[in-house]
Image (cartoon, rainbow, N blue to C red; front, side):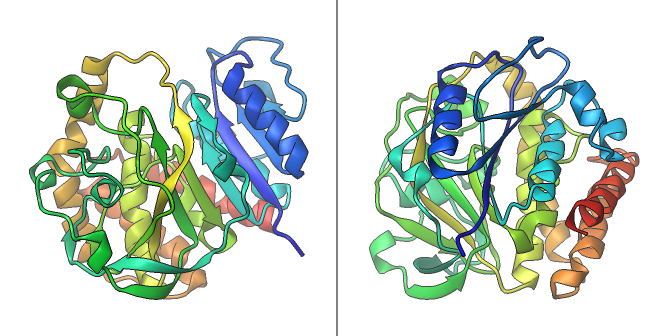
Length: 336
């Protein structure tokens, strides 16, 4: 039986070209399409092929996280994940309302891959394995930007289990504010490539076009006690650490979307990214030193231990644990 797929987006826009394209594609392929609104969302949002949840509908889900999660924050996307899981999703594809889906967005994905594998221990600039240009993913420590990447042609090919897969974006990819202020766009990445990162190879991944299989669903949790420029990045570091404990590898693959970026205040983005520039190395070192247990049943406790560590570093407020516990309780409810 084919996997049941859900696409999850959070948006404060009226139905735009991207949302209409996602809705049409989901109708063609029989995928669930969920859009999570927020306080600035337009009233009367209507889009065929979409399950739209405004704030009232989110509160009506009967989930404790709806009451705890702040408005005006990207972390409300967590409620979309829970709605997708309650709807029976086996696989969640998350993206944003400014990512135009390419043909590859709609192909079936395989969790288990035969892929070029990076076994390097430390920070890896995965974007450089898809481009000869100087480019790096949002969240990579700035002092690792010019570290020489391994040569793709020399990477060993291995079988790997990849329940989290990051797909790149062409034209205006997910780079940080420093890149946008100093470097040039657009960028087109090489097609037809997939690279798996083995245990100990760190690279941040984002929520732009990311695929999650059921075993990894608990790791979808986006923290709300940090800026929206860090929420998916810090999630990714925690997800990587727990993935290693289960023998999973994070897969990066060639673009499946083309981003026409929504307007941003680049200096505002820079300010929101400063905690990452300053602390992402420390976060990785702290997470790497945590004693975690293996197995799916241990993932909730591992998440709590990882988030407690970031709270202990002073990077997340103590109240983050309230939201995480609500997420875990709601997750158990929708999966029952």
